[in-house]
Amino acid sequence: LLAAALIAPRTINIKELEKPSCGPDSVLVKIDFTAICGTDVTIYKTGNVNVPRILGHETAGTISEIGVNVTNFKLGDRVIINPVSYCGKCELCCQGKEALCPSGGLRGRELDGFFAEYVLADKTDIYKIPEGVSSAEATQIQTLTTVYHSQRRLDVKPGKGILVIGLGVTGLLHVMLAKASGAIPVIAAARSQWKLDLARELGADEILKLPDIHALDKLKTLTGGTGPDAVIDAAGTPETFLQSIEWVAPSGNFLSYGTLHEPVNNFSTFQTYFKEINIISSRAASHADWMPSINLVKGRKIDLKRLITHQLPLRQIQDGFKMMEDSSSRAIRIAIAMH
Ligand SMILES: [Zn+2]
Ligand SMILES: [Zn+2]
Picture 1 (cartoon, protein in one colour):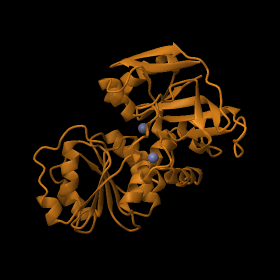
Picture 2 (cartoon, helix red, strand yellow):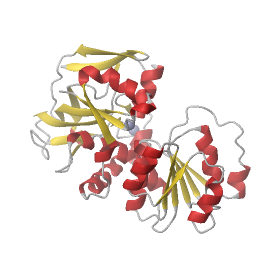
Picture 3 (cartoon, helix red, strand yellow):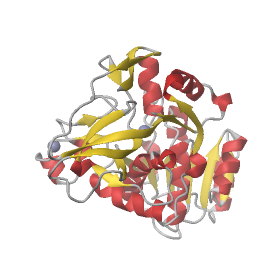
């Protein structure tokens, strides 16, 4: 079987591996598509991982071999795979916080991931893809689980105003999920007009083009005077972190969703004290986030179609990474066809 492994920063090698054999509690999944995520791009650029490493954690495939103890799936079922590995026994795992398991990791980072023609998956880590959802789209259910997990922590309430800053895949999913949860108005903010237009099509009530020196006044007007009850920073830059704290309403909630890779300079806690703001962090997702996410896609509350902007064959995977680094490509998600 073929697999794409990172061997050095910005260098991916397609290599031949032996096809693994399936144990009694696992399935062998013939991978249809694996999407390139921002996390993959960060690892690709920095090489900050044990190499060689097969990247990729957003995947969809078809069961091609099945263990004898796997009873609720059958050969040919289309499935998605939870990429979070965990022990299942420690205190955090027992609390349903498997992503925080000290002996766990993410497939495609600490462990080999899904840019491979075949992968093994444990029976507890697979979920059926709803009918009518393509395998390329289905790769984004994993992304939705992380968004769902974070909004569960944010506790989105119907009728509350939400601002989402940054409109990559996760920002757009945050917009759709906030709408589905009854938040109003849902305001989408970004620098690119085409992303704002897409957010509008996907359900944003209002848009805010950044940068805007009058942003605070505009947000107050849009939300009846106080500012948004919740701000979700899906961009994850020091600038958007500080803007979120400035723009959120007093007593509001700030979800710091996008991962910051640099320190926030000149950050003072005075505003968080003065406005009594809750700062909420969120990492990955738990098993508990998968079925609700699948149900939202199955019930057409969340539309993943528009998020897959490109598809490329495995041999062009490196071009895919280059496109993800180049904003002029207008790539949101690129699904790599593994066969
Ligand atoms: Zn991802
Ligand atoms: Zn554990």
